[in-house]
Amino acid sequence: MDKTAYIGKFRIIRKIAEGGEGVVYLAEDEKLHQFNAVKFAFGDKDCRERRALREEAARLASLSDRRLPYLVDITEGIDYTAEIMEYVEGDTLSEFLKARFPLKGGDALRLMMEVTELIAYLHESCPPIIYRDIKPDNFIVTKDGCIRLVDMGTALFGYGSTDAEMMSGTPGYAAPEQFACRSIGREADVYALGMLYAYMLTGMDPIRNGKEKCLNACAAAAGRETFTLIRKCTADSVDERFSNASELADNLKRLQEKRNIASLITAMASLLSNVLIWGSIADMTAAGLKAGGVTVYECIKAAGNIYGLFESFYSAELLEFHIFAASFIVLVTLLIKNVVSDVTGKHEFIISYDWNELYTEKISLQRR
Image: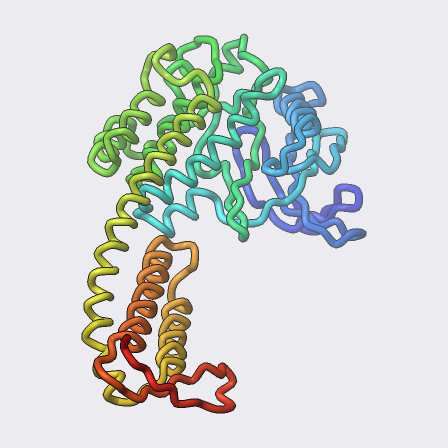
């Protein structure tokens, strides 16, 4: 298509995707100065491709979740149908994962929960929508970290009934029944979600490596419970899988809760260890501070500077940061306690209690 071509007020800029369900171009709305995605299907008016594109537009129009692109318009010419949608900018999930492999188990779990909850929304629609082609390239990770689903071309309302409908999906992610002329249900999407989770954990793409190699690698990379969950998702028998994405999402949440409990126990053990270490440091440092005539205020101010330096290098969301913060508070508390109270006999110790340092006052400390 010519780069200067127009579809109504939309100027075609460049091709951004092409597949069996149509060709997608980036276009600009020259009146509103917004970018949109325009998906074309060519042929006779009643050909399968154009009918499928009209059905896809109808699906998008019926859905309101912001994780899906919204429908802007649909227009038809003599030899084409054009579906105009929101343009979702970002990296495909495949690109996002390749830049971050290997993912930590917790990161993969959080990402998997987002993807599963999105598919669960489709499964809980009325009638249920079966996506049928779950793979990393069909998800976009936006700049703010949100997961968006960008292609509804293969989705089915309800259950498939014809051979043409059932023969759809990407080898490696598609469930066995999708290529066996059997009825397709929500369990097919659960299978693909399981393969996607294995890919997140191992970096092995099932399209190239096949199911068994990916799962063997996953057995080594994932914990026992995680691997059991993936095995259940990817069972060859439909009856052995989770029945839909909502059920899978519930199990992922339970897995997340167990991880949180384990992390809390680990954090508490680490904190206790840090308390003992910092306490010893405080005991050893107190005498030196007193001998040098360091004020309590100066001590706290220096501690604050160290704390700020640490904070600039670590995200406040990290568990390690919170462990450090709690340990640091313990250190400062013990340090002040030792400096102020561990005084034998009568001593003079300078304490600056005016935080603007306008003046200091000598206080005689006498142990009772």
